[in-house]
Length: 282
Image (cartoon, rainbow, N blue to C red; front, side, top):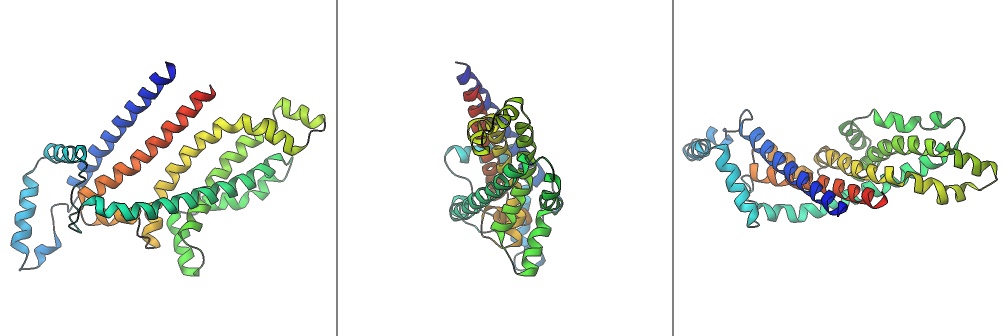
């Protein structure tokens, strides 16, 4: 019963969060400078039709826009792209696969590097801070700068940038958690009794830090989603992040709203899964 109540609370929070995201996106787009302008106004051939279209849109209230969007979502209709003049679902389908594959590879390799580096360094009694300097330096490099450097040097790509970004952030957390775990009294006693490092890791270290690692997993998804837009834009990857960027630049509200809600839903689902696993452990 407790798990059911906790799950319902998490679901309710997720629904409220999605509603706030949708409302915020609509408000920011509608009141953004230049929203009710169109490049076609500069062309005498299309100026009158463009002004008429913008005037009709200006007459609509924010509430009517939100109501129309919600009604469409309830019927599986995400609207029509203003820029491409095709259904939003048609745009999202192939781009979702590209972004999902990029995220899967970035998360996998980022976690692999972070774990392989944090586990042995956390067991060292001295010198771990010096060996962890490369990860500290990576934390200081913005995502856009890292991607631009890859382009200028013609080395690496979007997977490498996302991998390094996640590895640097996850390493710091994992190293701190694992260092504390190695200093636990029962671990020190096991070392004194001559237990091998692999026995301590399998039998004690991993079970002790598993709840923190699960919490970190949801944060990794959030970090990856926040970096996906600049990575896809700079490397010209035809994914959801690039689509969100072009939608923001071209006032394409249906597309931007759908992409924003999609990313928010991914974050909510990751948080709910992490919370459910913590409740199972408890």
